[in-house]
Amino acid sequence: MSGEAKKEITEEQKQQLREYRESIDNIDASLVFMLAERFKITKAVGFYKREHDLPPADPSREKLQVERLRDLAKSANLDPEFSEKFLNFIIREVIQHHERIRERGEL
Image (cartoon, rainbow, N blue to C red; front, side, top):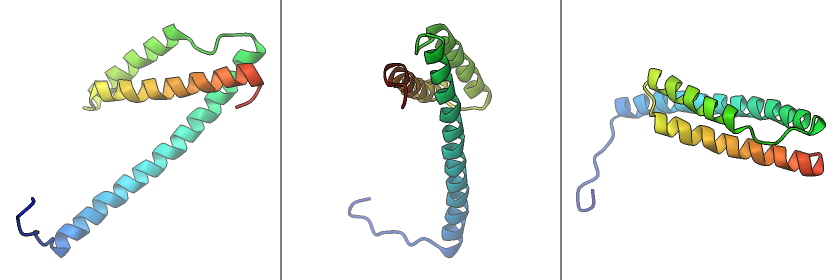
């Protein structure tokens, strides 16, 4: 838009954007709480694995989870590639947590 006059936004447009953004903010808050709950459980899994001398990673479980999430993403009209990247990020974090628990007995 360089060189163009800046378009003024109407009050109606501002209100609509506020409503959209409020919903986005609520969803973001829910995601944070859901991730916190997920990591609380995976932390318990890490301690369980340490107690029973199980490896931090489980590639066959991870593969199944990625496939499952890709299928869920497709049914929800979400890009399966994005969902796979997101889950792989979470899996890497969990494995790092499990490795630290195994090495030090803590996160």
